[in-house]
Amino acid sequence: MSDSALNGPGYVDYSRRKFLTRATLALGVVGSGFAAMPFIESWLPSERARALGGPARLDTSKIDPGQMTMVIWRRKPIYVVRRTPAMLARLNDHNDRLKDPQSQDSDQPEYAKNPVRARRADLFVTIGICTHLGCLPKARFAPGEPDLGSNWPGGFFCPCHGSRFDLAGRVFDGSPASVNLVIPPYLFVDEKELVIGIDDPTQASA
Image (cartoon, rainbow, N blue to C red; front, side):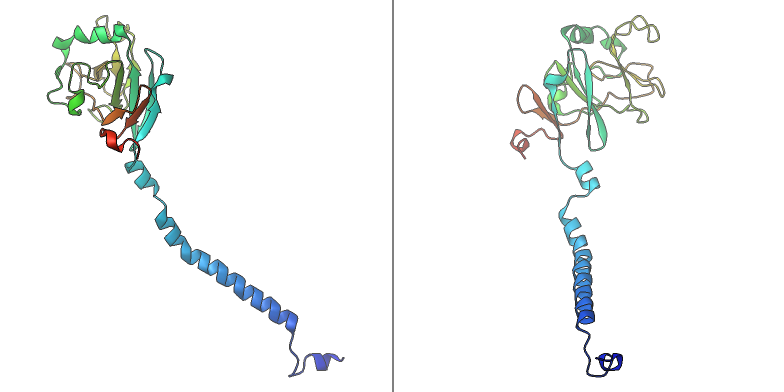
């Protein structure tokens, strides 16, 4: 067959038609995929929603006595300290040096408004943000550290402006911070699992 016959008015290029059909279908699939993306994304929680949402969980059995670990909840660092009997004993010897020893003017749930500021004496849970200008206090648990003074009982020291807090997060006189470290809502599911962000046991399995 001649080239003129192939290109005549009655000629149909089936291979080209198949190519165009397949290309159109492919574009349609891709286009519908892009159209569906906003809906699919709307089903998924955003990073902001996750950050502002659910509780944080921690296995406290991995924290050695006298040590601290940190977990993030709502973009805030949460300090969890396993206090030893010696640490707890030192909480009673400096009330006269604290701004708010009874935590009357500080922020904590009702169940943490006690001398140890905790549900359990051995585990201290606090938001690790200085109540002065929002820096992160450092763990300085050893008593009598030379740069903090011989009467230092152990606790937290903020390197930004020098605020000092004891092992219950209570602020010392002379510190720029005016109130104690904040205690978040939390509960214990069992002897090991700590849940930060809720304090209603009925919500712990959610």
